[in-house]
Length: 303
Image (tube, rainbow, N blue to C red):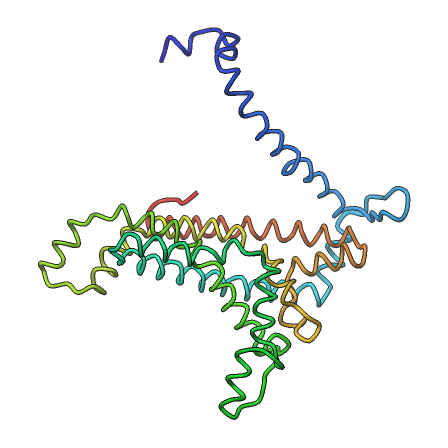
């Protein structure tokens, strides 16, 4: 290894040219789609508009306008509430599903079950929204038909501000727990079965073994996945946009729908870019906080 490091740089580069060529498309796509668009951050400090020539630097004026907006803070509050509850619900559901799948001993039945619970993840949010809009329809929806059959009144769930969020959590739970369980199922495969056997001999029941052996064994995986999801906690557009309507805008408007309205609908690109930049900074802070929490709880940093 030492002799190889002493070889001239040119010879080492020529030796690995095929590997560099294989890496080139990935680097090019990373540059084009991840780094070059970051130049657009400059719009947050200008009064840019595509409908006039040129733009001028205005400093933090867009941020002052943004932070003075009641609608922005309402969207930020909604984003934190909705994303946090979605993250907790989906994480707990994924862990629970993984534990249930791990208990299945018949191989063919386990594979079929995993396939069925994974399928919703690959469905577009547009398709999912269409399915649940029909299911929850106040006129022809299956759920309201059952409610009316028992003497109740039909409820327009997706246009009721008290019901919109609970149904968003339910739909997200149904769509994502199967995919979220994949990593936990893999982690459970590495749990030491000798500990379970010893616990059984000591009289521990199934729940005690899950709480004191299984969950501690995969706690590192749980923290890593949780922190990675924290980085995306403010990225909430598709599920909200396809289920949102004017009747529930006060409880459903989130940062990304706010940015969309400001930038695409209202052409206020400076303010929308400022909101997007603010969202990114807060996401980084969430990741750092989660990493600190992981070190405090498990003694190891997750990232």
